[in-house]
Length: 171
Length: 343
Image 1 (cartoon, rainbow over the protein chains, first blue to last red):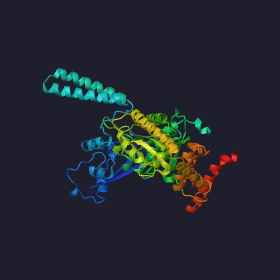
Image 2: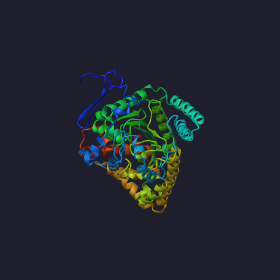
Image 3: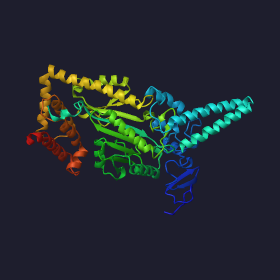
Image 4: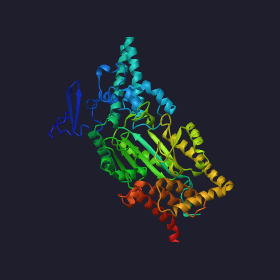
């Protein structure tokens, strides 16, 4: 195998090679072990749009026949049709992509549609901050709309402070 | 009374307790879409995490599913250390600790499935150990978690807590009395379900049943354990009452069944695993009711040792079905008679 440098760090030798063919155009990604470590791999190397459609259509991909309105996960390309057939999602973002369809299903399965058990580390703090940010953002928008710029500036500073705190927690 | 009575007092009915936690890695496609290199990288990350963690009171051995022989995999399935499905995705592996009570499946339906299995009625201990392992792994990686849906899993049937807790119960009297079906109806009201010994769609060989939670969302892990624990207690009580009820009101019928089973097992020269399980169930019942002078621990071990994979790994893997049935019969005779020989 020819030695290829990692697309991401341009320093180390690539160990993971992903080839995608989009509209007949071949696109290759080369990444090293370190850049594919669990928290560093970006969305770019994880875009399977089209692959799922191929599987759902038994390998016969025909873009002209795809339903324009069919919901697809923008992250992994999972179609709702594929999920309905196989009962499996392609990635965590499918939950957001198909939320309207899966909530009734989850309610039928579990009787509830909201998790109340253990949370990930810092989860409680993170979600609380997220909610605070949403509230502050709404207040900021309202202040701007009413042309209360002094208030808006205060909200903006509070948002900035909260964002930097959140980043510290995540680090 | 045999010495087994010193063991915890539910062991007449409860064979084992198990908790499984499903976890996935943030920003990583689920195993169904995970490329081989990344699947292998995940296994390596978990291995490094386990090796570098000094706080672990146990050491793990890694088994790469692609390197396992068919029978080796079968043994792990029969011991309930891996699921039958492990191996369908790239990079499937399992880490098993020394005591074989903790296992971590990698790249099954989800990236990680932590499992703790303990003998007897030990649901709380089982959860505690699985929960600790969850924390250890989370120290090395970030899990996929949703504010509303909790731990995200490949299949939404597991989302939320990602937890499946189960107890394996021996229910010969309820089976004899055709009460399993009506119990199934009752269990569903508590968000619980009943299955055969190897999970969904498997037979309840040897009158062994797994009771587990069906709901994983909208309940806390402790509520799941509490519900399962309380309902299992009720089932244990019912099975015990029935045992003594049959013994009092239908003693000859029950004795005949138990002694015939013992007669066949202690004399048979060839026996398949299905018949063995059926008869061992009755011998186990006889041991519990003290109709037979046998230890429950011996019968429990036999229920596992006579499985095709485990038997083949003990006596040589090149056996055909006929040889295996002969060896199984011999093994059972020896185990049942061992105590008598010792005396």
